Image 1 (spheres, helix red, strand yellow):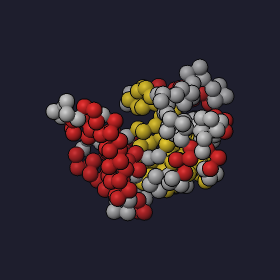
Image 2 (spheres, helix red, strand yellow; image 1 turned 90 degrees about the vertical axis):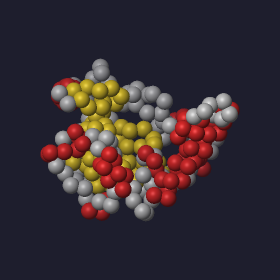
Image 3 (tube, helix red, strand yellow; image 1 turned 120 degrees about the vertical axis):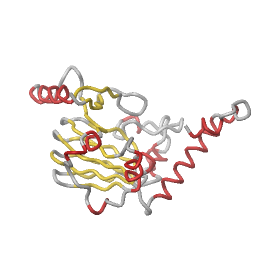
Length: 236
């Protein structure tokens, strides 16, 4: 009966997939039916993602963080507060995917495939600027034919080709800070994913947060002298 977050890969909400919460056993039942029906369902392609399984079941100790990624200030901080973390389990059927994005706070991330295969499309930092539309928005899907529309995406042809990686079962991929990416499950797949930071990328995260704060301050600057808590609202 454990509640888990599940995204609908066939629906778009802003530049992501809308999520719902359902009992874990209900998702497993859906997944079995999805496979039996030739990887299709009237419910769409559902993807269990961003599940804090380690936090929900700390007594199980189901895995150990690889030593290369063990210096993790982000999760160590949240562990002391005992309210959140950035350790996730993903479970998705063949055809499930994650739209184009960069990781939270411009953190590092690592992703370990327990079973299944993934295809990653990765762009080095800065290349995403060529992929913005005329309104400054990043694409939802970097493989969309829309990106060839110079009227909508005027600089898309200037972007480099993405680094394409096929991740097999038992392999771990490391994603550096600021690398935008899009990910597909080529088979029924289970993976463990962490966002993390340490002394090697804390400056990148700090600069990102400062830029985000400046953007918010600029957006609501007209209210600066009309709100007693303007600075606090900008932080939120």
